[in-house]
Image 1 (tube, rainbow, N blue to C red):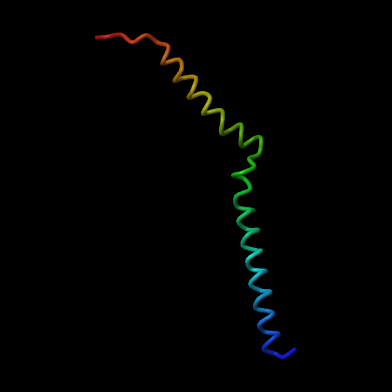
Image 2: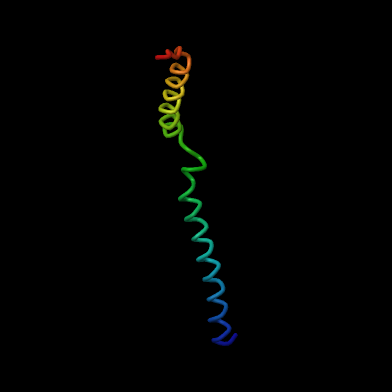
Length: 66
């Protein structure tokens, strides 16, 4: 194999390795978004549930016309 062939082959293999590394990094960055932990999921839902309960309580109150 000539030196040019070795350089081309190593460039192709390097490009695939770089592509795999970018994909792995992207998967690592989005892992918390797609698979939230139980603690993070509870923290995210508790304020939302409280806000919905408050909105429902306000909706049940009678509207007083002035």
